[in-house]
Image 1 (cartoon, helix red, strand yellow):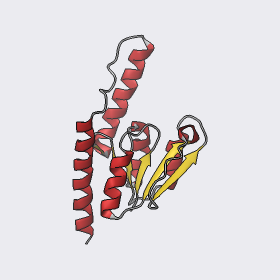
Image 2: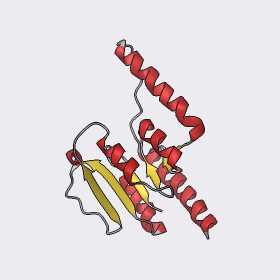
Image 3: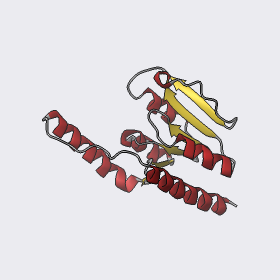
Image 4: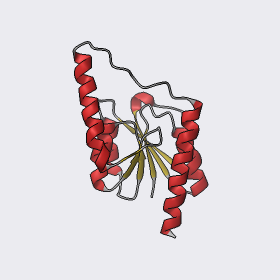
Length: 152
């Protein structure tokens, strides 16, 4: 089991790494070379860079993940590709994407894109706050604890 982060724009990398350290899990961050960093990560974190391009990191994640991996992404399209593989997928808000909810999320994304094409105002996401970080950490921590206890 690995924790895989869609690294392009993820605000919860440090929180995921913190939990991975606590639960002794490897982390894989997949991101575009456009987001190259010299930041040093712990040994259990693997950084994978892909070429610049629309959805390149997403396709690399789809290619690399296994059914027991957990992925953190805010990308509904990526989530929709991972769920049929049996991967658990979480949003940075702590919400877990499911087969039952992904179609509605994709429909809403499509409708918002259509409204934007018509120059109609569509509210964007609220700024990510410190409380959002704490909530994500709490939710993912509980899920990991429960999952790992069930495996014992």
